[in-house]
Length: 274
Image (cartoon, rainbow, N blue to C red; front, top):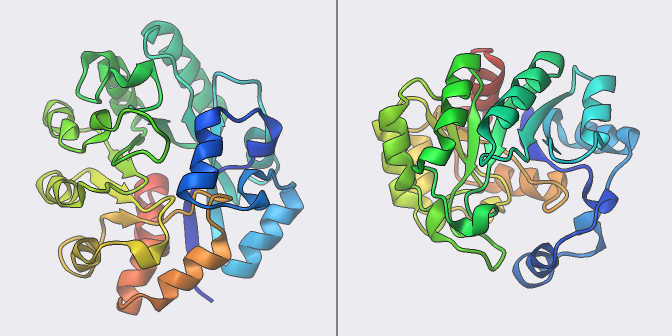
């Protein structure tokens, strides 16, 4: 069976009220069914992972909300789960950074994350100085940061997520481990050039059905980018079964596919070389 590390899994959608823009994403963008906003129980999630060869999953948690399923699951099964940490108020940097550092010290955190289109009314591209304290702290903690790239599904400002903004970030913070998440559509070529230019940059295919990935990215995966692309589903937005089934059908060598599905995330987030 294929081995996989899922770099972005949601387990608390049904536990909180969804904003209108998320409902629109479900209905207009993904044409999702009732499972789109489900919150699995621990054993249910583990069974689903086991059935599809997902050995580890990084669960999203929000530091602006009370502790929920993600922290509970990671606490119960640290061998299977790590955390992706979002919800930092970058307009109150010192409080946010103290909270992040304390949380990282006490929990199995794989990365922190921000979505430039999703906070501050989309006014702050990732090259804005409001992010610089977070980048500095991530370098200090040797903690990767995942940043949404590409056109967002919700009707929110898209320009802050143009990957070209990350060029200045990588230039100013060469030690920063930075991963673009949710692809980079329609700016795939810019994202690929950034990964060629900067050794610490990666791209995660979260929320992308593999059959819709562009040929330019698949070519990069086969050639210069064998170690640069990371796998994720954005479960339950997309199921393990669907995404891994489509991944198996792509025209990729087994070694390239295994690097994408497992090896690259294992090295980048967990420090375990292939």
